[in-house]
Image (cartoon, rainbow, N blue to C red; front, side, top):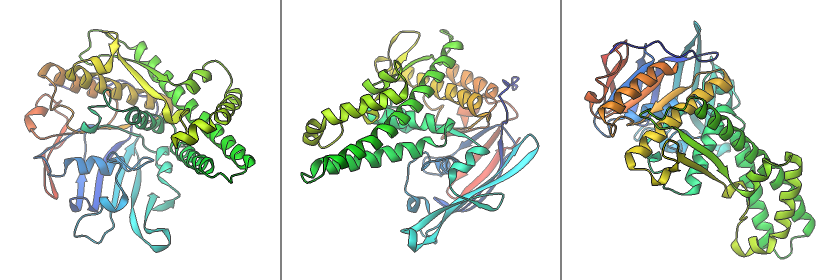
Length: 391
């Protein structure tokens, strides 16, 4: 299969040319050179394929694709700290990004450190100037039938890929909501204190909801513009559901803040009894429908849900490129295992045109038989990676 002409992404299309790991997960040391835009990692379950994707996912704000604690990423039997670095190439220019942990008793025992071209930077958010990352893992297979909380976390990851400040806003909202809950539980809390924390809740809640709403609207519009009812990956119809989110579609954000503060004030007794704030972005939901069939995604077959999810993630990658000017790295863990041959071939054709570097894993190397000839294929065994076909 020859590689088709790729779509033209806006701006940069960085590629990882080299990945170096030290004491990360199952790798005491790894120095992997890569020359292809499509990269497949094959090997038995537990060999360490997903560990490589997780390392790449650390070059973006957040806790990576497993959402693991820092200590859990260090190799068992190792020194308890780890390091990961990538050499990126974009438009002939090379940039080295590094992240990892070091001992820091003043920061709770372990601290994460980040570097760009050897110089320390404040946080992983700085990496967004050089690379964006999106991913799909088997843990997301139940997204449409799972809880609203799962879909909110998925949505926040979508937003974070285009807006590196979104994670800080979500964390600030969580802190403000916890503060409000504590005050409501305290019969001695002065009303002025509750008013003050509710003002903070309203400001951060509207900012979080507005960012989510904008991303959903942009993604929905991009999907509709390229909809194809005959595609093996059905298009998704998206909507962000919640009373606060609905009001943002009808009035300016500053007015929504005032309205939400009144809801919080009127709902104090109810929320005190519930032990949590019942109305707000923490209760919103991402509604997804199978576009061609016009049914809720949860009612589609398992295979249709998987195909719908793949289509959604690939559309998000295009949105990231359009909004940030950087074609993202795309990490697809065990993506082809449950696809029929027609969908598998269509997937590889779509990925070839995406304009991004794509890293895939699969236990069976035969799953990657339809990859273009200029793709790279690696065999992963515990602690080691060997090139089978290097572009």
